[in-house]
Each structure stands twice: as C-alpha cells, then as structure tokens.
Length: 83
Image 1 (cartoon, one colour):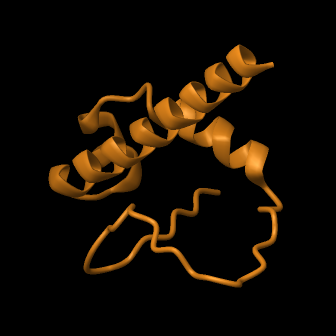
Image 2: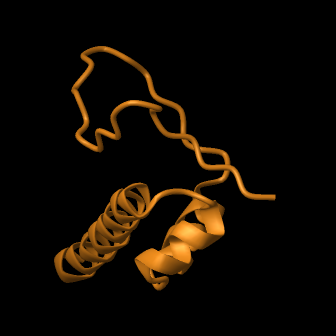
C-alpha cells in the first residue's frame, strides 16, 4: 500500500513557524525516512510511473524527497561533529 499526502494545488515544503504549539513526534518516522531514502534513488520517470502521475508532479516529488534525505544526512553529520 502506498499513501502520499500532498496539497492538491501547491506543494510547499517551507515550514512556517507557529509559536507556542506543542508538536508530537511522528509515529512512523523511521518508516517515512526509509521510504524517502528509497524514493530519492528513483528517476523522475520511474516515480511518475509508480505513482501514476505527470512528469511535472514526479519532478516535484523527487525534488522534495531528495531534499529531505540530504537534510537528514547533513543533520546527522553535524550531530556527529559536535559530539
């Protein structure tokens, strides 16, 4: 089963700060990271075929997933260097 949730009109990956809001930890964080890492390895054409979407949407998805993977990798490296 494959479920990806995204805005139907705009995929905006920029966070907006919300003051004084307690955020919970994602229940499936590891699974999401594994999924993102796997998706980042696929070509745009493969993603479009797998998701049954246009090439333009596949480009946006690959860009978003790739950025998540790179950000996570850089965060881990920074943590290692500071400890």
